[in-house]
Image 1: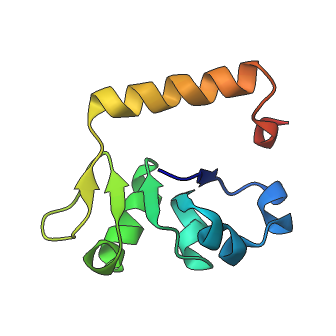
Image 2: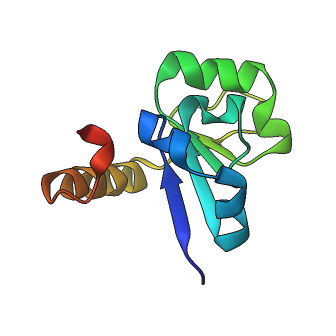
Length: 103
């Protein structure tokens, strides 16, 4: 298993060569990042953007996880257990100063 990169949509992402990251490891992106870059896995939890992603057919050709997948969208459900673990990890990273996106 190699490195993984988790990207949000903050301004700090604008300084990163996203295509280079894909050559270095698996890239996970959130919400609207799909508009300008295709991560290996897209995760959306905000209902309006999740529905837009699904209506545009993104899940038919890409890996997309959301809390409420629409029928026949190709998107997959994030289990509540995994979602809770991820939220705890993000909160921990923010609390310890490892997550610079919240600053």
